[in-house]
Length: 70
Image 1 (cartoon, helix red, strand yellow):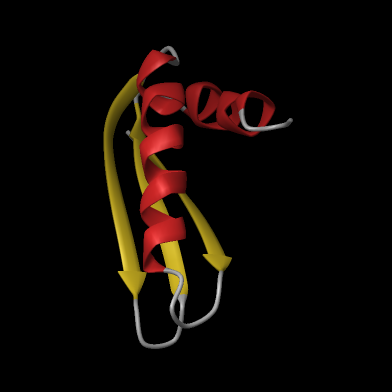
Image 2: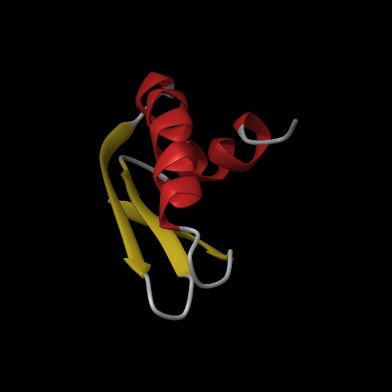
């Protein structure tokens, strides 16, 4: 099993934005091959947020970066 951690600094007071991003990203992650699980984390006071995803293989985890490009 492999894990991928994506972090972002949105700044204080951006909890609603972080939740919106999480709502938009969750279906993208779940649709990818080898997806096993997803946890969103955040520090509301400092505006630091992240997403820890679990994958069956290294290749599956690496496919995430291609799926997240605009």
